[in-house]
Structure formats: C-alpha cells, structure tokens
Image (spheres, rainbow, N blue to C red):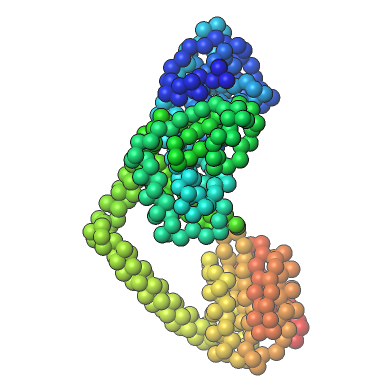
Amino acid sequence: MEHKLYYRDAYLKKFSAELIEQKEDTAGRKYVTLSETAFYPTGGGQPFDTGYLNGIEVVDVEEVDDEIRHYIKDSLVVCDHIEGEINWERRFDHMQQHAGQHILSAAFEEMYGYKTVSFHLGKDTLTIDLDTERLVAKEAAKVEELANQVILENRPIITKWVDEEELKLYRLRKELSVSHNIRLVIIPDFDYNGCGGTHPNSTAEVGSLKILGWERQKKIVRVEFVCGQRVINQLGKKHEIIKELTVQLNAPEQDLSAAVNRLLGQKKELEKSVEELKEKLLKFEAAEIIRAGKTDIVSTVFQDRSIQELQKLARLLAVDAEEKVFLLVSENKDKLQFVLAKGKNAEGNLKEWAKEALSLIEGKGGGNETLVQGGGKLISGEEFIRKVTGFIQSCE
C-alpha cells in the first residue's frame, strides 16, 4: 500500500513520481503507471480522481491486476520524472460525500436497525439502499437530525490498518469483503466500518447532510441525499427556481403551494370547458355531414384528425342517421387512418369491409359490428374512399 499516497494523506494535492510504463489497453485507451500516486481509482462506491500528469489531463483511474492505471487524454512525453496534481475540488467533494454516507448509514442502523446494503456516489446526489421495505417521514427526519448532530460534534474520523486478530476488537457495521489489507474507518463510539475510500479528518468537514427523498424498490428503500457543498448547491438551485416561480405566479414564497393549486384547479375547469365545446362542435359537424350526404354511404376526408376524434364523430353520425353507413378518413403525416360505422338500421358486414380497407393500406385495425377502425400507409384519402365505397356497393 506504500505507493498509494492517498492512504498516507488524503489531503495531498500534488506529488512527484517516476514513470513505470506508458501503454494502451485492449480498447486502445492510453494509460500510465507510476512508482506512487495520489490519484484514487474507482472502488468501494467512490469514483476516481481526475487531474493532471505533467500537464496532461487524467480522465479515468482504475486499479487493474494490482496496478493503478492513469488513463490520459494525450500521450505523455517520455521522461522519468512525473509531476502529478489532482482535482482537489472533486476529491474533497468525494471525501465529504463518502464520510456523510458512513454517518447516515450508521444513524439508520443505530436508530431503527436498517442496514445499508449498497451505496452509490453520483455526480449531483448519492444514494444508499436500506434493508427495509418501508421508511416513513418521521423516521427519516430523526435519522437526519442524528447525522447532523454527529457532524456538528466535530468527531474525529480515524483510518486504521488491522489484521484479522485486531479486527475482533471492533464492532463492525457490516461484514468485510476482504481478509487481508483490512482498512477500518472509525468514528469513535458511533461507526466502525471497513472501507478503502478517502475521508476527511473529522465529521465537521462533512459540513451538513440533507435527505432529499426516498422510494421503495422491490424489498429495499433507496434514500437519496447530499452532503457538504452539495447541500449549498441544492439550496441554490431550489432558491433560484422559487424566485422565478414567485415572479411567474405573482405570489410570495409561502403562498406558492396555494397559487399552484389554484392554477391546477383553473386548468382542470378549462380542460372540462374545452371538452364540452369540442363535443358541441362535433355535433354541429355531424349535422353538416348528414345534411351534405345524399347517398347511403357518406364519406369525408380530413387532415390530421386523431382516430379518437374520428370515432366520436362516427358514433354521433350513426346515432343521428340510422339508415346510413359512414366512412371517415384522415390523412395524418405519414399514415392514413379511417373509421367505418353504420346506423342500427343499415345493412352490411363492417368487419368484411374493414378487411378490404386494411388491405389497401397494408394496415391493422379492429372493432365490432357497428364500428371499426384502422390505419396504415399513406395514400390519397379520395382514392381510398373510392375503392372502399366501390367494394361496399359490390357486396350489396
């Protein structure tokens, strides 16, 4: 572990090392290995560090076959001496989040016995999966309060390498996945946990912790939260949104919920009014179609009408003109849709007619004895009507 400088000092930002080799992996990605490094590789739920080696950007870091590979954007000029610098803002953020996760997981277990079964540190938020099927707001609030109390108490965060014999002295929160090179991260009298990640020296450096929400997934509950600077970032984003909403809704922050509910109520009423007006328009349209229809088979071509509108219109027509058959067609961008309907006193087999209609447009459809619908490739609506009408008349 001596070549892993991040274990000696998690606060190390710059370091010097010797170049061991510069190669490409099987995917053609360039990487270098060094005599020692401060770059943390992806592992244990914590993402890799980024930064620079001799001014060349490091875009990924992985540990493969016990060597740490620094994937670089461009090839290094071959030389023995390497100057490395990590992206400290990214590293410290990961330190805050990872330590916060330890604190939150320990708090859930201490207060309610909910064990953490997995952990993910994302770009903006992080999550833990709890071994429980239910979490209520009161529990989450109490756990958050305890976690922030531990943070405020400025407790030390201690890292320690132990062997299997020494391990027996500690009450670990979860079973270890390794049996050698065992590294413990300890918050005395609160949390003892095996971990290979980087952490600050005290809980106070975590800053604060905020639970954003949770959801049940099968037999676990996934909790989303943020720590440290991410709490400030979340607050800033939400504050900007609230400021914008106060202007748009012309309401102070404390009245936003009532303003939104009022708008939703108005929207619902407007939608109801629009639907009622649409129904009236369809009735007027149906009356006009019936008035214009001089034959037993009445047909009309529309542009960009939904199949639902065609169905509503066809039902109105069939009720108002019981002796007639109606063929409504709509030319919609890249497809043709149609509805065939008949009044209760009209004769004919709609399903048989629909088969012929669908064969003309290589389409699919369905329906019943009084109304069928379908759609397929786009052809001229007038041509479609002419052919379908001709077929219907030949069946009489």
